[in-house]
Length: 180
Image (cartoon, rainbow, N blue to C red):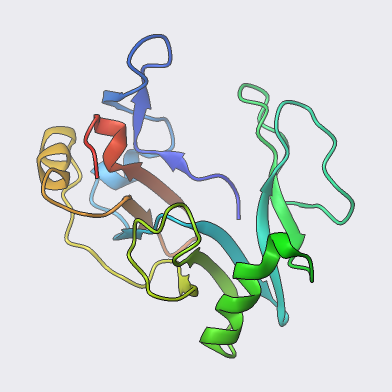
């Protein structure tokens, strides 16, 4: 799974918030294409051919660990190089293993690991689970001002729009300076 582009451009020089200018390649969202789904606040995972993987981002030109499977080429601007590592038997993967035990057999796809010991548990799950990406459809607006107002009373991390061809675009509540 490649890094998902944001809907609006970010002010990297000052506030680090988004402003009302669409990122190139995300115009289709404002044109009404795609389905809005909930963005979960956890850790990205995927299941492929029965193997559970965790997301790993090799940053700033660092050499990724053995077994790293690149999801895309390194970003020449940010240095991010997202990819995957097989979930192992070590203590660092305990919550992934617990989630798969709690969820049972899951189909191939991408998921979000959520639960009591993941990212401070903002999603308020009582046990560790893998939530499939793109399954909770939202009725979210697409224009800058309307989206900012919509987020104000929502207790969610953000929105990811999906197109049938696999394209995705995201926006997070905090991108507008709003706290969860």
